[in-house]
Length: 195
Ligand SMILES: [Zn+2]
Ligand SMILES: [Zn+2]
Image (cartoon, rainbow, N blue to C red):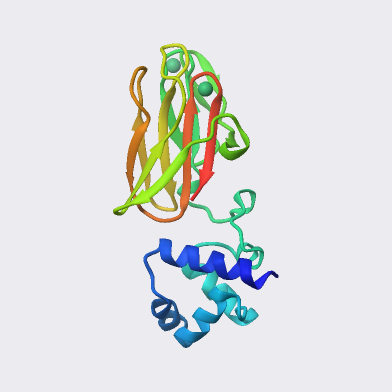
């Protein structure tokens, strides 16, 4: 375990949740100084505290130890596991809480598999200001090749913005905590980013 990395991660998660070190300390019955020590990497959370800490921060223990969110290792059964389906015939967009047999225009739809945006040529920017995430992307918006929707999804909420050709990709989402942003390109598919 890399104390510095874990510390930075804890701080990031805490501030994203709008919590102070004191808030965490009070929830866990420890001193704010202890939380401060973790965050600066001067100490690491005792094993016995990891489960509670991970629950407060909304990640799993492994992620805290690693100091990084692991998209493939999310275990909780929540909205973040939502499946998305797009009908290429009519443009219909369907979401489902679980894998399901979904048909549209006489065809069975495959559940969209997303690629990591950072590792693709469909990366996008997420900036935070005034309680909102501001999403921008450099991508053509022509009738034959455009981003058709952007989704921000956390464990209990989903925000969905539909886009059309000729529109600009300048989108605002109200901050609701940890989760994923997805963009869907009609030609190139589905891309995600963890926030
Ligand atoms: Zn259809
Ligand atoms: Zn594209």
